Image 1 (cartoon, one colour):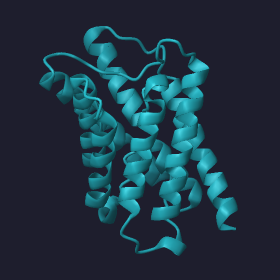
Image 2 (cartoon, helix red, strand yellow):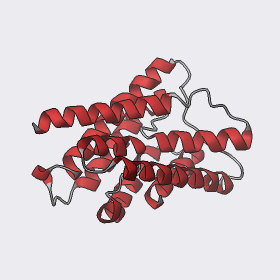
Image 3 (cartoon, helix red, strand yellow):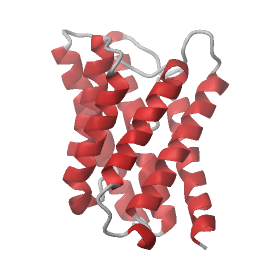
Length: 203
């Protein structure tokens, strides 16, 4: 919950400020939060990553559901705090102008796939056990993805990020749930595909 909170808070505040360096800040905060919580919880902070890790066999389904619940709680709290600090302004990922829902769905699927495949290889594989670069690899994947497709899908790569922001935006300022499915289906499909590919790589 703590790691997801600071990830979503950073997203909200940097997107709200309009800084062009938002992807750098988001990747950096994810990196440090992964190092902060990796030894405590595994530092998933992302339901799609939790799904991939569950399919990998590193977490039981009941425990995975608990992770996902607290990831969403952290995201909701962060979206609310971001709204407060920004004077009532909210943020929510959405399909960018000039792009279709399919474009956004594919972008979310591909870069969540990349993210979860990186997580599985650097944080769950015996071949890389004990490495000190796992947080850097994970954070840089999100940063690269945000720069690459932020202008297409908003670059959530995380159902908690997408839903937390959309729920607060919709309930507080009259936003819409219309694009919410993209940020559920795309990331979960990408996470599941990453687990399948990882098992093929690890065979």
